[in-house]
Length: 56
Image (cartoon, rainbow, N blue to C red; front, side):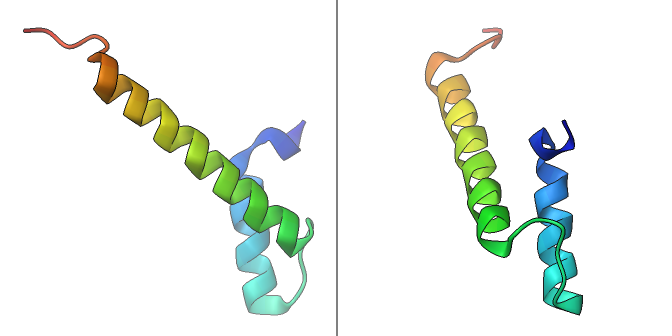
């Protein structure tokens, strides 16, 4: 369940960069961080495109 939390991958990446040890593989960590970033950007782009909940 904790692997659905994007912070786990960020912390694992920082831990790997400082100590050379990580809970999650560094490739998976980078991939999941990139995936969460792309999903977030897509949601923001959709909000800007549709003007969701904007009051005129």
